Length: 255
Length: 336
Image: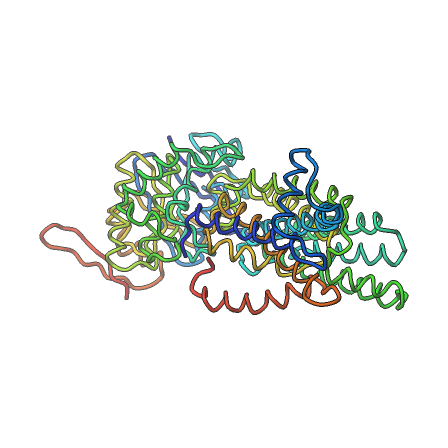
């Protein structure tokens, strides 16, 4: 299965954000979306989720237009992990994860025993079962990100789309979330995430997609796409590359 | 904050039962607990009560309809308040946010101005539905990326216009006959309630509440940001219309029956969330029980505190304001 955008023109009724974008995400792989602020990352994300209609071109699941799916069928295939935010109401962690089951139930139904099982397994998967009864407002930012990941997993989708999953997390939690993203791909899900840190893409993703001013600068295997030259062009800023002489692994430093 | 369902529900039920007992017993014609039970029991079983006929009349004809109306109005306003607060992701929202009360108020004062009689005034008080439909239509036509914000702002603006309309009608009204009636209506009262008023109140309240209860889980998801709710598989546009329509129907019916009673729809959902948490499948029944009990206690105060009836809107404000400040002080960190 694939989640793809074909010759997409993205944006809003009064503003075109990007043109001529082709992107493909296969199951079992991790794709990182990089680019400067305002380059169109979030808009592309929303278009692939079906939240925003493309101005031209087509977003597709397995070659079928997203428009051909009901909003409910779409939710059973593609899950969305938004940036961590402060919620208005103090739902318990379990209720938040159960909301991921919404598209599996009828219009008037409440989560069933089976839904609770699935949510419970998702909580176990990310090691946060002990938070089950806690209000979502009273846990840390890192824990909230894991709860949102568990909610996406409970949705039982084929693809997960994450908006800056490591933003506003401490160093340790960034690593934890990146490991979980790898685990999701290893279990067969296709994962697309945006990030401001090329190192996160290097460490987690199979492929990278570089977006600047609404056009694709480069796309392909991370090791090939993420070079100093490419990144300097992407961000229009000096970037230093560090290479470990033993393993050959590299990392980037801004400035 | 316990957030346990059954203890919370039990407390809400206890408040309602306490309210019922006090409301039936207290008043210019005191009724003992034994007499109350006797009359209700004989009514239920079809036997003849041991209590006097006067007592029976007080319980069944005088206090009965008023008590039922108070419970229905309180429950309706609390349920609608909870629904609107969830939908607008804002705990400071009350059921009149989209102009339901101001539309009803304009309808009612027009009814009084044109001397349309009780039924006409009651029907016009459903003008709240029209007002909300207008707000919704304008809000949707404006097509913003933040439909919720536009809706709230449109509600405020249209509400202000309707308020000006109410002001104009009051200004033009006959100051000796009509103006006191308008003022009394706008402050809210259940004093004139009789058995015939209960059906136009109970019908719409039941219908709207059934819709909201049926959508209870979807209402949880609707309290998330728009894009998240859609990504979870909820068609937010149609769902919002259904919830707004149901909550507005419930609000309009209660305003038509009792006039404008503020604060209940704002304060009671907070209390209910403190008892059982924000999960709508638990919150809605708790709100209904607690709202019914709360307004019943206030209405009992309204008719017994002073030699003359005190308007309900004034009492709910006098009790609601300090109570709400206390709530704010205790719950600043999270809006549970």
